Structure formats: C-alpha cells, structure tokens
Image 1 (cartoon, rainbow, N blue to C red):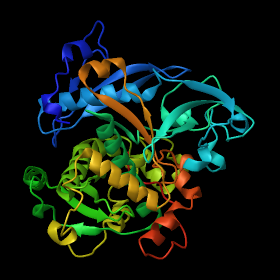
Image 2: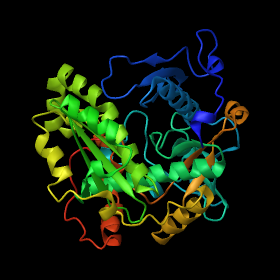
Image 3: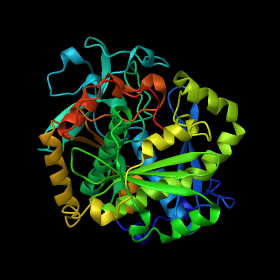
Amino acid sequence: MDADSLELREQCLVNPVCGAVGLGVEQRLDWETTAPVAGQTPLWDGRRIRPLTWSGQEPTFERSRRAALLEALERLAGARQRTGQVVISAEEDLTREHRVPDNFGAYGPGGYVEGIVPFSPDMPHEWVVANSLKDGREVLVPRDLAFFAQPLLTPRWSFVCTSGLATGSSVEEACLFGLLELVERDAFINCWVARVGGRRIDPRSVPGTRTVLSRAALLGHRVDVLAIPSDTGVPVIAAVARGSRAAAFGAAAHPDPERAVISALSEAWTYLPEREERTVRERQRCLDMLRDPTLVTGIDDHPLQCIFPEAKPLVQDYVGDGPVLPLKEVFPEAPLAGLGALGLLNELVSRLGRIGVDPLVVRATTPLEGVLGLETCSVLTPGLSPLDFGWHRQRVLQMRRPSEFCRNLGMPEPATLRRHPHPFS
C-alpha cells in the first residue's frame, strides 16, 4: 500500500462539526526529533466515554497527517465490531471449532480486576467468526479478543490492545502487516523476559538512517540498533534512543532488514522527547515504578521506567556490549524480501505452522474504509507471546512460550524469567 497515493478526503475525516474520526489534528511544533501529528476520537466503551488516540510520526507534517488519519481509521475499525455474526453461548455448548482465552495465555491471579473474570466453560460469552490463515476454515473466538474496545453484554475475559490490528489495500496485505507486528512483539517480549540478547548493528551501515543519525549527533543523543532473534526467521529489529534523562524503545519486523531497522529506529527516535519530558515532570513516580513493578498499571507506565541515571544499567543490560556489526554481516541475505504480499503471507503462515501456531483473522473493515479502498483486519496468533500492558496483566509470565522460543532457537531454556516490566508502549 502506497499511503502517499491514497485520497483520504481529510475534510470529511476531521472537522469541528461532523468529522468521521475527530474534530481536528494537532501538529507538535515543539518536537525536536520528528514532525508528529496526533488526534483523538471519543469512544464509548460500555461504561464511559474514553479518548481513542491516534498519531503519525514522520519527517514532515504532511506525511504525519496522512499516517495519523490512517491509524485513526484502523483503530476505529478494530475497536468494536460493526459487521458480521455474533454468537452468544457458553463454551461447553459450542459445537463449532473455537478458541478460548487460555489458548492465548492466561492471566495470573492479579490480572482479574477491572471487570476481567477468569474463563469458565459454563459461562455465556460473546463469540465472533475468525478464519484460519492456513486453510480458511471458520473458528469462533471470544469477541473481546478480536475487538479491543468492544462493549459486551457478558462478563469480559480479556483485555487486549491493538497488537495484530492492521490496515492495507487488500485483506492479504492487512493480514500480513498484522502478522508481522505479532511476530515482532512475540520476539521482543520473549527476548526481554528470557534475557535473550541481540546482535548489535551499526546504524550507519543502513541506507536511509543518515538524517536521524545526524540529528541525534546534533542533539547529543545516542541510538543503538539490535537484531533480535525470532524462531520464524523473519528479521526483527529493536532500537534504543538515549537522551540525557531517559531512553525510548522501538521495534519492527520486516522481510527487508533495512526497512525493519528504519522503522524501529524511527519509533524509538520519535518518542524520546516525550519520555524525557515525562520523566522530568513525573520523576518520583518514575523512580517508584522502577523500584516496584506493581505500580506499572497501564501502557503509559511501561516506558517511564527508563529514567536516567537510575535505569541506565537496565537499558545497557538490554543493549549489551557485543561487537557492533554492519547490517550486511548480520543479514547477509534477505530471501523473504522479494516476495509479494500474498507470497510472504503464505510463507509466514507456513513458518508459524511449523512451531505450532495457526494464525486467525477477523475482518474488521468499516463501510468508510471500503469507500476509501482500504481493508482492516484483526489478526490473532494463539500460541505466540502477547505484549501486555500493566504488570498484573503479563500473560507471558504464565506461558511456556518463552522456553519453547529458546528451544526453537537452539538456546538453553531460561532458569527464571525477568521479573521486570518491559519498556515498550
């Protein structure tokens, strides 16, 4: 999908009277790294109106506006179901193939708060139809796993985020983008909790990073890039941007390692100013969270632990002190980069199948997106580690997946898992 060629009809999407996604967009003129644009849409979640935020972070405001509006459309589509069938039934009464929350990882005892209750086979619940990306067969999944802000008539089993939600110019492209994000997050969280190190990459060896690196040098910031392993074989990159007061993390998965580096670096680089500003403004709270993980309760808390100088050892432990290598030495070949969207999707589904994962997709496209020629899909991967927010909701700590991940890579299983919240947002 070439976002620059889309006719988004911005005046219909954002205007102060009847904007489809919001009243307007805000350009952050004070940002020193990129040219971010942000907005929000009021959304009823069944209990109260909450702001659904969306943003774009590109080198120019024009490109950031387009990226922000695309993210707004994507998140509105994935927030709640607008088309398709809903089945209300207890799990024990279902006669069709289905998946339950435990297939995606169960919460620990502290996770069942704020309206979340443990899965029970005799409890009525709402289910929606997903399709296997392997063979197209229908599989019922809990509605609250497919749509991240869906109000329910039944008790809620899960609290999820936008991971796996993606928009493209076709269903296949949307599924591919969603699947790549889930592979990226699975690799990141497994490496974090199992203390699996990455291979350091010299960002100067990557075409397309010159502007960011020059800007970082001007501002006195440091950037590190790591290739982190994935048992899918897809290149996954993590990036760390460090200022004088805080650090910011980013990650990306892409068949082309160069594009993965640029995406991960852009993400970390973009958010550094906010991380530094908030760690100054909320310094004591950040220090408290660094010392007591139970105080990390939501998505905004996780990155605030990277406060300097106190968290420098934590960040440096993640980056490591191994040799810094050119990209071509870390990735001599990129055999997946030449495949088209459908070919790459099929190859990725096949690779996931070899590690016991059957990806599922729920089509979430809205009528408005249909007019614009877009498709949005919510991709689910039972068996991969989810990236959760809030220390009490870390399903990965209850799963066998980190050990299986290490075994698949030919590494020793971790004796213990890292008991510290990840720094991602």
